[in-house]
Image (cartoon, rainbow, N blue to C red; front, top):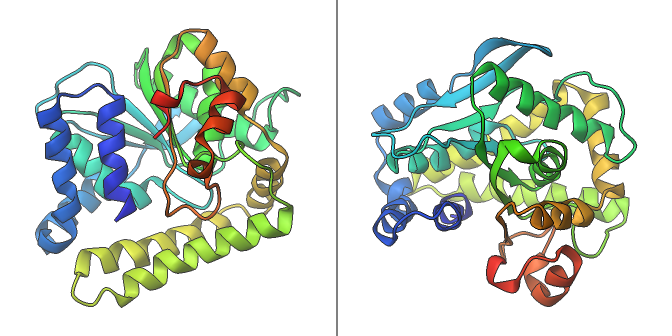
Length: 288
């Protein structure tokens, strides 16, 4: 399942030893063995807490490490109509490797001044992440952005490069050949439906079924929590290119990796790695 296999790419990017990467790779088998008790425990740990920041109150998930191996936490920025709960298995896998994982669960960010260099709806979400890690006392983190979250992670790296230990963009929006608005929306709809129906059909795999249903319910909850904001984010994705921001981060010495899954129907960057390398300035060895 793609959410587990991404964990291997995350582990490689975070420079974990091969034995540790193998351990997180074992998450591929979790859907068949995870117990109801462990599922409930993971869901409990994923409950957001409300913290006070200089931008107001934010809901944040601060997933503790198991035998913490590093002081550098991982900050996850999820994609459009995804919430941190969509990545529950990945949180668990990184926890097993001694990684603290933090994610902002306030879906549409915080009010902030406009900056014409960035899509405003995504700038609001990037500023929410900075406000949250400020309040948590985190000075620097490995920033991981999935799909739309890659846009916000790139904006964050552009504005606050000293806060970014490394930048991992997974199936990033804003790169490659630009799609029309209607194809973008229809591709996203197909992607969500495939994930949900695939989970529902997994009769012999209760955890995969849970993850599929969870993805669908989280998508609905995300959009309902701010319909106007959700529409503006789609428009922002349609208009945005993050190539200059990625190139800027690379030039500033921030380690950048890009992961593109062959299961991604929205942004199939894996089809042309040479073009992606030219567009971003990232060597092909950092494209997966």
